[in-house]
Structure formats: C-alpha cells, structure tokens
Length: 272
Image 1 (cartoon, helix red, strand yellow):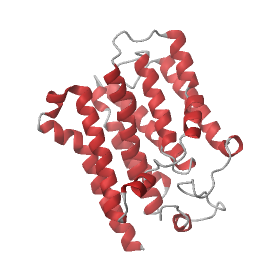
Image 2 (cartoon, one colour):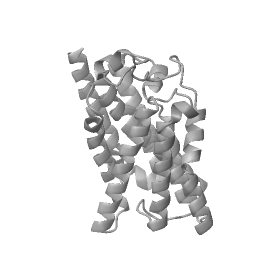
Image 3 (cartoon, helix red, strand yellow):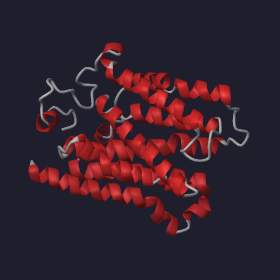
C-alpha cells in the first residue's frame, strides 16, 4: 500500500506539472498566434483535462468512466448548481446595479474564459492533484493544497502590470484556490461545486466588464467576500439543507467520527 501511494504521488506530480506547463510548451510551437487567444486557451484546456485523465487511467488501470468519477465529475450536478447560484448572488446583484453589460463581450471569449478555462483549472488543480495528494497519499489538507495554490496564483501573474498588481492578483487567486479546494473536500469531492462557483464568478466578472484582471476594486472584492461567507455558511449546513447523498452517489463517504484517519477514509472511498 505504501509503495502504491508513493508511485501514485510521483506520477501525479509529473502529470500535474506537465499539465501546468502545457500552455508554455504549446506556445513554443506558435499555436497561440495561429489559433488566437481564445482558441489557444480552449485547445490547451482540453489537452490538460485529457492529460489528467490519462494519468488516472495509467495509475489505476481503469476506463474513462471511472477516471471521470475519480476527478469528481460524476457527482450530482443539481445541488452544486443550486449552491453556486445562491452563493454568487451578491456578485450578480452588486455588479448588475453598479455596472452595465460589456459592449465588447464575445461569445467565444465568454465560453473560453468563463466556462472552459475554469473547468480545466478545477480538473487539474482540485479534481486531480489536490484529490490525489489528499485522498490517495494521505497527506493533510494544507500539505495537499499549499503548493498547487501557489502555482495557481502564479499562473495568473500574466494579468499583472506592476509589482503590486502581481502581489494582489497572486494572493487573491491563490487564496481562491484554497477556498475552492475546501469546498471540493467538504462536498464529498464533487467537482461541480467549486466549478460552479468559479464559473459564475468569472462569468459575471466578464459580462459586466468589472476589471481586466482578477484584482478588482473595493466593490468587486466586497461582493467576493460576501460570496465566500455565504458559500462557507451553506457548506457547513449543507446536510440540513440538502439530503445527504446515498453511498452509491457520493464520491467519498464522510467519516463516521472525527478521529477517523486518512487510511480509514481511503478504504471507504467509492473509487478505491
């Protein structure tokens, strides 16, 4: 079991780093100039998802269906959509009353950067590397989330125009990565939950043209904080609001008691 965990962790690390660097690798071949910003982003994101699935298929010797389940993509979608819609209401309301719809909004850009890009990021950073480290190798939450979140933040540094922009954008997106990982974990590894939040936050940001970067002003950050507060409250009370999932629908069963260790949790993993 220990050797299997070590092997899985090594493969997961290599797969994650390859997926993380894939955009830079493809740029070398001039694909960004050929396909344009949105087209290149879509192609890169789809390849990143396929790379992560290939890593799971290789390590666990399973088919695509179980690989999707391991990523958290066969979990219930309905409650994730309801949760995300409720949690992001402050963003929609705040922007709707203070901003107008962007006249430069393009459907291709909206699809690429509000839907496909957040989806790929959730697959790579939460569904793949965080889950492999946290559920499969048995490391703690912070050990599993810290490095991926730092890299997630650094992955958005191209938006910065100066030192303070770099610090602010990296900090906000890095903390966002930790928040998304926490919701993913608390919702029994349902990837649709952090994706729903990520998608709607990006979607309303682009629809109302709030800012060219992830930094934003005081209003943008105020409604984001309100969204986080609501999301945390809903998550902590989710079993009172939504009926707990039966075993066959849950991606990871909740511990029977607080003292249950990671080995015991892994044995009860639906995928194992």
